[in-house]
Image (tube, rainbow, N blue to C red; front, top):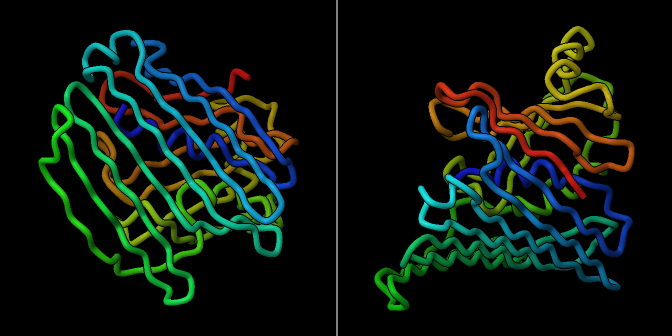
Length: 245
């Protein structure tokens, strides 16, 4: 469950014209089958937006993770048709432990302040505040909801480099690769042919046994990614996230 958010974030990529979007996803892992669910809501009102994603482990994964849950929240304003993050919050819990991370973006000073608080049985056991060493108008959620505007030509092979709040381990770096024509049959084999365009999102940090997490994406005509696969994780197969609603 710890890394499922990356799969879901990439799945939630969508065009930004809708006022409200609801999307439900199921996450499965090789021979273990279904291991998690996610529910997402994007709301846009006038010049402001909010994105709310809740993830929860299920079945065996729930038992082994101590009932792990994650709640990701992004709030901010809309400028030139794009969502600009003012606050990104991540709440994770398992067993008696809860961690709350809040990122406050100051666009005037181009700074990002991170507040980290860890609780055990409701009591604060760790608390720290720091300023990150990079700046971005995007967080991990808005970046992918804004991709439809950022990537104009979805058929032209190219690598795009972005920065996002919430990815500080890699100095905010996130890459999205549009594959070459000769590579598309591989995407169709893994993700199916019901896609308007394909891409690979690269998470520049170690995930499971891989140096970099490479997530293959199939994006539909409506701009919503319907299928995403993190290939060959350890010995048990792929992690797959599929939109079910």
